[in-house]
Length: 134
Image (tube, rainbow, N blue to C red; front, side, top):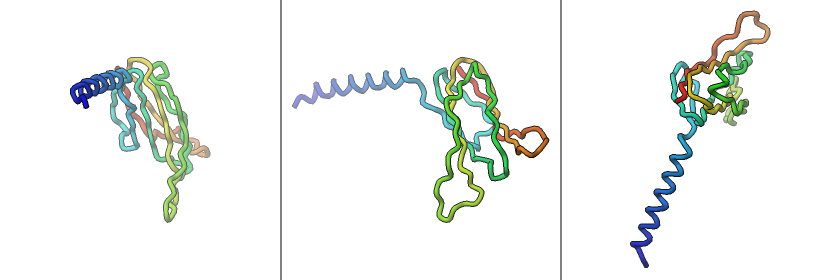
């Protein structure tokens, strides 16, 4: 049993793992409905994940998010089914999921509007944040 050599090997492996984790950059930032109105900071390459309740119970449709495509790239957008509840919750239409990646330094807002298709009034703002990419 050579514990001195094992400790050195373990220290080298730990240092290499730490360097690899730093090179990968910061992990994704996850936001929810309660984060509306915040200003957030991202690093170039970092992902932003957003979960919002689906407002379809009021007859609303969500419009495509508004943001600067030179600063952020929308990687994914989908509607997630409600989680099974016992008893089922009335009016639960699940969640909206969005995933962006920061492309370049700069600032942009992310605005998600909703609209009822039969109404003539302009869309309503549902959610907004300000994003600073460094």
